[in-house]
Figure 1 (cartoon, rainbow, N blue to C red):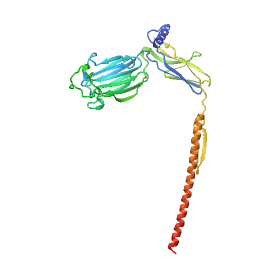
Figure 2 (cartoon, rainbow, N blue to C red):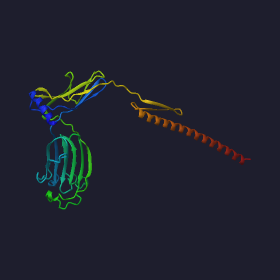
Figure 3 (cartoon, rainbow, N blue to C red):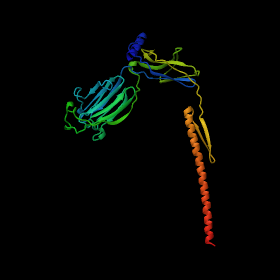
Length: 357
């Protein structure tokens, strides 16, 4: 699918005399109907091939214990690695930055510490995708949260989610601190079950890639008439003054400056929407219950179906029954209290007569 899209863009570019840039089109166009208007929205153009994954690392005083790799979660292929025996040992107390071009998908980044005590104070790392931070870690000497032999961050470039878990050695590391140990000697060491650390999301927004060209504006077309409806640098456009009940169809292009000439990308997919008059729907099943110097009003919200109405009626009549039962009990209680007071007064009167006669 990507290959077809790429060939389509290339053919369009050649036809217009432009071959140096991709002129990336907008993505995910949609339309929503309102009252006498349609709202057309889309996502910014993106490099159809790759994203930039960045690792920023500052090693602690035992840099040679630190290494990392990035693995494609679907194919299990190692995309990049640093600090391993094959890639070269990292220096202590040194800042590094690596950019890795990756395709869209799910990945697992793992930071390793061969001794199993994680990063000391001064050691830290940050992961970014197209300049947006995915996750960061700051080491602290002696902190239990900073201790690990593997610190694993899973993430997805399309959906923008990440999850973090860490592993520690089941037994104390069998070598002295400061002793450089070959990776083969740590492979047989048993690890504890993974500890869930954190999960969350990160922004997948990014600037329009330079490979797409020098961006100027977005242009919205009526696809039926081919007329330009408007230009905007935002990611939505309101087409107003429409006739309710009539369908309208649109497409959107991104416009780039190519050698001083405004040049359009290939059109997006067409989308349609029909504006409809907005009517305020009233509530339903209004009921009232008289009380002592008050009225109880109960109703059902707009749009309730037949089943909901029946359930609502049952609930209402149950409330009605309980309400009147409470009234009956209150009156009965009042009567009992009144009779009790009368009996008490009569008994008191008899007692007084006996005492003073």
